[in-house]
Image (cartoon, rainbow, N blue to C red; front, side, top):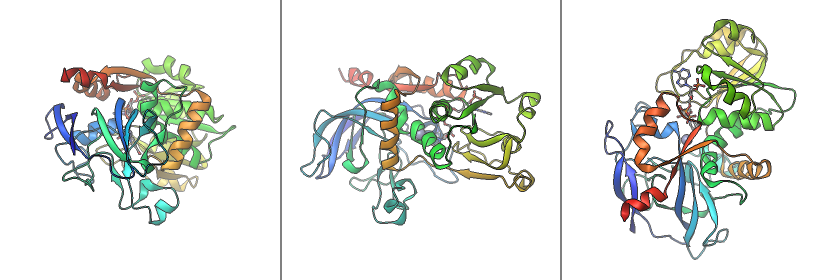
Length: 354
Ligand code: NAP
Ligand code: ZN
């Protein structure tokens, strides 16, 4: 065991602050990674502030961060896929049971015995797992991803959650050329959803509550932008969408989007607001429409997404911040004031040690 530096929250209302955490020495199948960048996901904020208390109570101290990019610094004797010096990524999962039907189907995100990157019971050390707001992490090689060499690393980090969480449902629902696709909420997830839906050939419509994001939405690849607080703009799109991806982090009117689906259209929720969203059965009955959810993606699909990004030169649009600005970044994220993902430059944590 060794001590790593990290930013952690110790209770529900405390800001994140500098601390040390235990990490295991690499066992046979482990890879030790020096973290270079870590994206800031809205889930980090929900979790650090115990906003999911009723379904997933936060275990403190908590070190968020599941959009990790770094360099391999040590490997266990049985590691076969990675070498010291490799550029790698780690997302929301660091372990699973490898035997359940979900694991066998490559859907480790649905394994009942999964270990999340932060907040799960650590199988090796006492206490919870600690995430990527840290200078290093040790992960079983089966949960380590290979990062394409041609991409900017600060912009790659968010692919490990925001990227796969939008790529996976767009693929699952067969989004392709000729389909009309809506993306609700132009945040970290939403802006990746726009890039992927565009890359898959769809006609992309962004729904935003922020009129000032219109130009950016078009630049990111949207064909149309709807300001969702304007009913006349919404009603123009009634019954016209094949698929809508809802990536909103707060309470909003889900039924208004169901009205925009075609017969047999689907809206998939990836946003996980603190409060439940009311659902009207009428909107679903008329039109045989469906609502579903989606959680990140499996490990093989995450690698497929990273490779796709390498081939198509896709990364997140990031604002790089030092870790000392993390609490400020959370406040800005709550105001939808980020273009379009914060990415922490972990060199800032190392400079604290000096
Ligand atoms: P984010 O960057 O903060 O983006 C959320 C966006 O939602 C905002 O940019 C804003 O877009 C919109 N929004 C915010 N408040 C709103 C309100 N009151 N009414 C309507 N729209 C509002 O967050 P994120 O990191 O993309 O995460 C989005 C959600 O997905 C979070 O709840 C997060 O926990 C969840 N998540 C789920 C998964 C999964 O596997 N399912 C994975 C990662 C994250 P506009 O300004 O364009 O309106
Ligand atoms: Zn996330």
